[in-house]
Length: 174
Image 1 (spheres, rainbow, N blue to C red):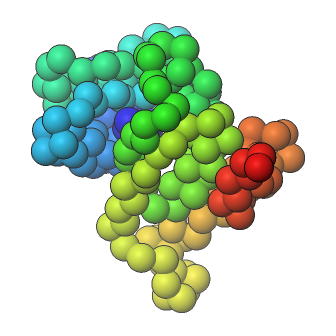
Image 2 (cartoon, rainbow, N blue to C red):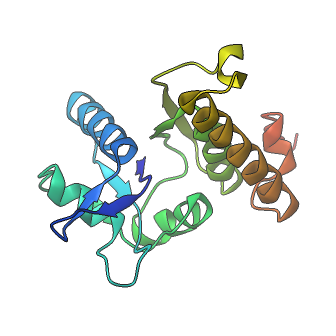
């Protein structure tokens, strides 16, 4: 399952996936082909005049016969809608493709909905102390880190993440 990360309108008036979305989709495609498992791309309409993010990336990369979640607007909605749209057996794990900073919140959100999963975390650059030194890349990475931290806290406060999953506790009755 690939979670999209945005689209944008080109000067020609067409919609294109963000670089992050393209990278996630290509990794998901490779995993899908190698493991012979279905590829699901999750991303809805973030702009009323635009197609869904999942449809944009499918068409842009000419992905062919894949499954799309065109309703979800965020990670939590993806966790809810994937079980409604597709029959995902919660007894069998799936692979979630997202970038490293987003993977923590995405994993906990999906786990809180009862899914068994693995995350394929990739990172173009590891977050290091140098990211705190003022630079364009450092500011961007720090902003992403803060966004994910606030998102995780918000998901915890609004019960979108179960606190037991924060510590990876699987409590089963005896």
